[in-house]
Image 1 (cartoon, rainbow, N blue to C red):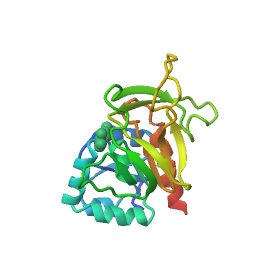
Image 2 (cartoon, rainbow, N blue to C red):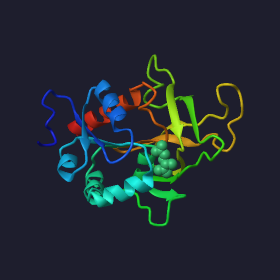
Image 3 (cartoon, protein in one colour):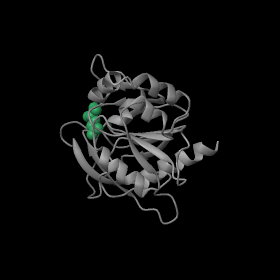
Image 4 (cartoon, rainbow, N blue to C red):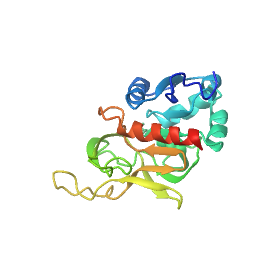
Length: 222
Ligand SMILES: NC(=O)CC[C@H](N)C(=O)O
């Protein structure tokens, strides 16, 4: 199988299947018009046109990537322009630098961002919110995206080539003040890398996956 093996024209998008909610991502990708395949080996990685890094525990995924000898090939493919979408722990893996990581934790890197792990803290460690997401909610007829945050990171700092797609608002929908998370970046794109601090795969809205599938299709042509 080659990288252009989309027999029916659909882009072939892999979901890293080492840990996390692989099935939900695969379903959202299919809904968004891609052919989704699980990726556990280098041969499978080399056959995809784009890759999703699901949420889970970034320290565990980091260890498994090294154990399965996928870390180096994946770093190389990211360097060569493979489109990758990282959600939550996946966002941590795409960050060039992290805060709050364990001593031996490594990332794949590629996005010029500093990401803080477990940033929302104990009080609000899991919550859902409707967010304005660039490239989605600003389209004609676009609505906010229902997002789920689970012990999520945020982007502490983004470099000049990073496009900010979503921030936490100043107030929640009920009017209460957000506090220290207000204004923090929770979705961003840097070239062909897309990252969200939230999980878009569990709220039944495939538009973030749609944004990624369009990125994969655009990379095919260039
Ligand atoms: N839902 C998630 O992916 C949580 C991420 C997790 N807190 C980590 O640091 O990896």
